[in-house]
Image 1 (cartoon, rainbow, N blue to C red):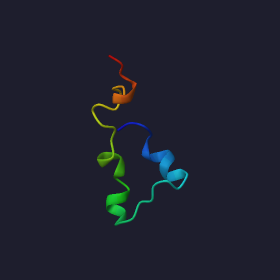
Image 2 (cartoon, helix red, strand yellow):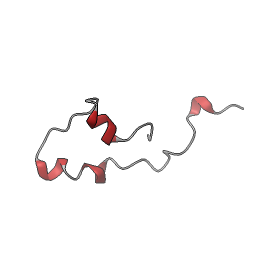
Image 3 (spheres, rainbow, N blue to C red):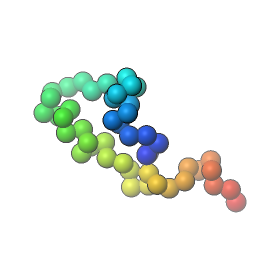
Image 4 (spheres, one colour):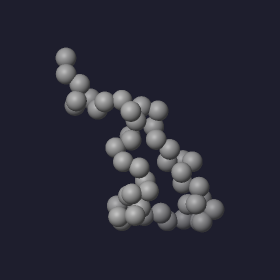
Length: 47
């Protein structure tokens, strides 16, 4: 969703990678920011 990136989550222990090294070393390819990551959250939009 773009609220935070996986690198800080890994560094502070909020995210743990488990699996074959061939997959976990390429996590940046499958945890890329979502297309709508820069869009404002629904709660922040006022009508």
